[in-house]
Image (cartoon, rainbow, N blue to C red):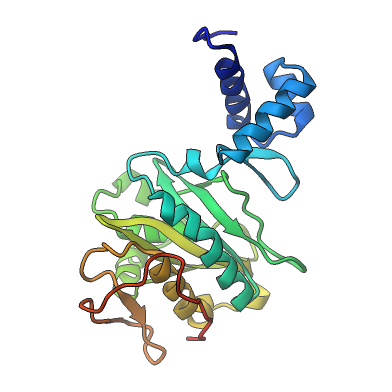
Length: 270
């Protein structure tokens, strides 16, 4: 073992966590990557999953869990991570499309929670997956509300330079085939106490979402993002797109906000 703390079980757990940094891992993969016995690797992986340090992708393989993905320069409150599952599931059921929550980690955005439709063609993004910050509506949202967005990253973006001001103005972003051909998505900002901390996304095939996915699902996505946002979100964070124009309108911020995950999300077409 390259690094040893002298606490055997901790060192072995660290080996398992390191193993999934290189990609999703089934039990056989964990054994090969860590050198641990099958029984030990399995026991540790299940324990780490219990503590949300690992989770499973759609194929049952182990990937980094939401507690790992939530760490970083702008960590999400645990209550927001807990509420995300309920909010994303409600949005998925209301719209029939897959939903995700992303946080930025440097040049990538990491999926920290997801809910996918159970049948038919769907976009599968496992928790722990890292996607580029240069494509997709989730990347647009995270960059649009970041005052320190890097010019070199924007220069490599798949979207036009005038997209981000539009995202800030209307409160949601949409993409068509930016990350993957035939895939469309809609995203909206999730606010913490200090500003935007995550992007809530809905994604699926263009055939269902149409070539105007924001007009079809923007209202529902923004409503879900607002539900998940912190009650201490800064003034101006409560914004929704109007069906008539798609331009953001201001909601009063003096009324009490609903704690994350307690309101019911419903789909309302734009």
